[in-house]
Length: 251
Image (tube, rainbow, N blue to C red; front, side, top):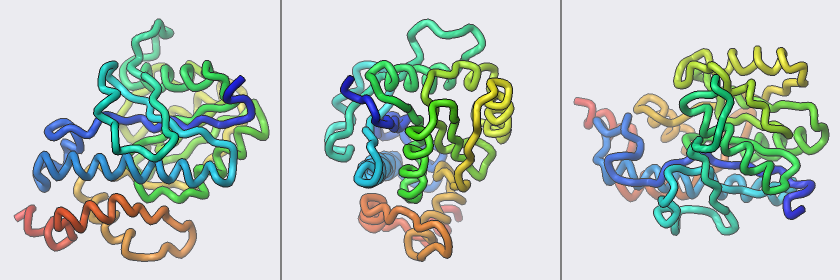
């Protein structure tokens, strides 16, 4: 099999289109700037996966929707990144709804390609430490009865990995709430699988976390070393986005 012994990491992503990208930032950014930032995030997240693949057998891909949007990712992804449709259209268990259908579809598609393990990763953490991605792949490739959870600080998760398509982890989840990680932990226990939790990290999807990202890019963390996010750094400079600029925009 082409993916035997390899952990696939699929970035859950939408194409960077003005007016449809980073919409929660539109009060502070123009639609064009928000789309440019989204494109920079995609570049950094996929380059980060590629960096982790230098340490552990990892294949990076974009798990995208809708069908037909493939060309919109051209020029925004790291070399070697492939596309996997994850629109949730295949038949699913009846209790898997909403975004859960897309997540499960992505897991199913990556495992069907012959990879030993599959991970869904958000596209909102451009400075996620590379070590967390490498650690995830190692953990999953070591044992087939593990689930790896990367909890987000808002109560969701930035990463979820497994070696079989565990539909129960996506059933009846209240998506986009602060209970997603807790509900997922409970489902893992119900399945009798080993749960390994990574260090928590944050999503950049509103102005407070964007200010934090701007600060973090300019500093060195005391513990985990963030990915330097060069594409995001360049984009922020190009559009003149600083903490001061955000404060002025908020007035």
